[in-house]
Structure formats: C-alpha cells, structure tokens
Amino acid sequence: PDRPQLLQESMSGDASTACFVCLSQAPANLTQSKFSLDFGEVFSRLSTQPKRRRPQHRAALARSASKLLLQAEDVLKSGGGGKYRVMREAQAFDCRQQLAILKALCGK
Image (tube, one colour):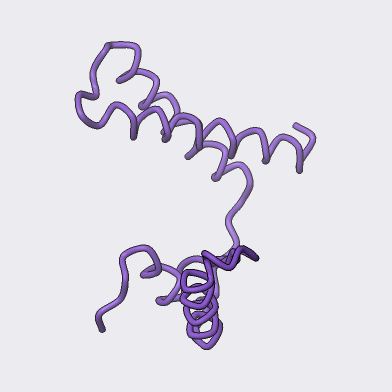
C-alpha cells in the first residue's frame, strides 16, 4: 500500500506515532484550522496492528548502544562522515540517551 514515509513504521506496527492538531482562534486562520481538524479526524480513524516485540536483556542493549556510540565517535573524531556527518552526530546523541536511560532505570 501507498503510505506516507513519515507514518510507514507506525502503520506497519513497528513504531508509535502521536499527532497533535493545532488550531488558531484568529478568524483569518479559519481555513487552515478547518483543514487541520479534517486531517485530525481522518488521522484518528487510522488503525494499526502493533507487533509484539521480544524482550531484550539490558546488558545486550547497553553493549549494542556502546558499540554503535564508539563507531559514531570514531568517524566524528577522524573528521569523516561527509554528507552523513549530521546523521552520525544524531546517532551518537541517540546512543548516549539510550545508555543514560538504561543507567537511570537500572541504577548501574
């Protein structure tokens, strides 16, 4: 099926998506607010089939995030990455967040 790229993982059950519809009280924005409400109504009727995920050990998650963080940092330290540098920076940030969350949850 033809799905917007933004919603593809949510529609397939691989991810969750939240949608916030913003409106304006200004009379000049009536048309845009109406379109927003129409979109929100259609979006609220979308159905997804969430997939059950197998549990993963915390240690395995931490190892995976640490390994990926080291790879990203190595590329960034070497000045490499080219047009993908921003993606590597985001990857490193994500890994640091995952490790911080695991540490906060597990106290280790």
